[in-house]
Image (tube, rainbow, N blue to C red; front, side, top):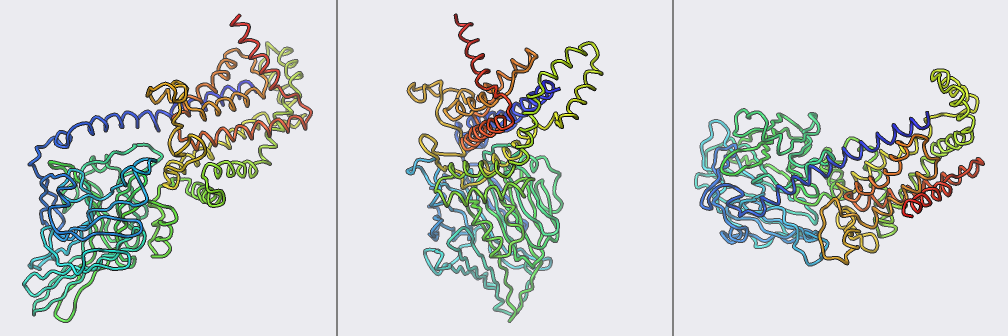
Length: 601
């Protein structure tokens, strides 16, 4: 039964790793190759449209936003702009249209190289990869007046928008209505846009506040189940809303607006936006005002992904101005920052902007614990080691019982062998006698599985934390590990950098994966070898297979697994010695290496 249990566990773990590697890494590698091929093409080839072509995105108001492709630099120089300069952001906003369309992050760069380019999130309209936020007033039924549009030239009261100095934009339609927009930004990533309209004549109008986020072309996504990328929001009582780019492309046509996607009616509280792995843009309405939101994919000369948010119509009359306030998050998904906005601004479930997954109740506390020790040690790698020890300590009573049960199993191994020999031809009787022996010795034959099973949720939760939290991005450990969220950059197939060769990803077998393989090999040698030769071969090759598989995993996860194996070996060794059971490690190692030497000779 022990051999059968070990075989089942080995097969289950092997299948889990094989399937997990294929899902988390195999398919993303194919997608990355595809994206690399697209990136190698010219922008015109990638869009399959000539440089002089244009794309029309029709906002709910029916006003076209016609875009002739230009480079980012050309688009930024095409019209008057106001600079954005805050502790975390730099960029500009367009006075033509009033779009917030040029945002970069001061603290984040493309690579670990401190001289690499800053991350750029927003880019202007009229560029192939445009990504921007746009605010309008839409005409309610029966209202026919000129409204600000994407071609409106606003008049600004300043040249720089800072966290200390808001910016005011003004425009008059010449029909008795004056439009004002006040844009403020804090020292983080949150803009506040206050639109107001005043009737200076005798007419009145019904206006609908509108905010939108537009993104041209599907961005490069990892495409794994462990991470959501695409549309995201929390629609009040309707709850969390997630829609990937692919699902938006395949959705049913929308009612009343162009494109395909999903509509949310009369929601109150929450947010709606677009999320990447580490960055996001989200519209946040007044949390007490109902709103309609739309996630949509629009086909055309280029693909456009758009978030629309509208609020109930307001009446503007002489002496009765109208006002609408929206917030816009454009930033890095830092846990402390996102949680701070959720609490400080009362944004309903804004913390779900970070994809903590189904095991939110375990994943986020695990991150919080790691963050605490990071502030204590100054290194997330050391924080992982400390948290691993604490997790081990938390599960010590259960693991202690499991290892104690395994020790008892080893102690009665001679009796089990006699039973198998005595009832070799009567399997039913053999199992009955074995169960009587377990009952007599108070042994749980499956208790030995618990230490391994306990590791699985911790493993995947830590994987989730390493994968989705920006705090782990470019976080160094010691030595050659400069990014715990990326695989170990060394490879035995380049002699750890001595050979100038860039091997395939499957051959990027670094030092930490090798350490993990050794610790797993030692852990498996703590137990007697299975009697079945097939099982022996499988258990012998499992550390090798896991070494190659985890070679593509984030270095932080491999460090955790290596350290966890080391602690498990120490714990199992002490428990076995305490129960007076022989530790098979040294005999097994001696047999293994003696056998290898005999084969070589």
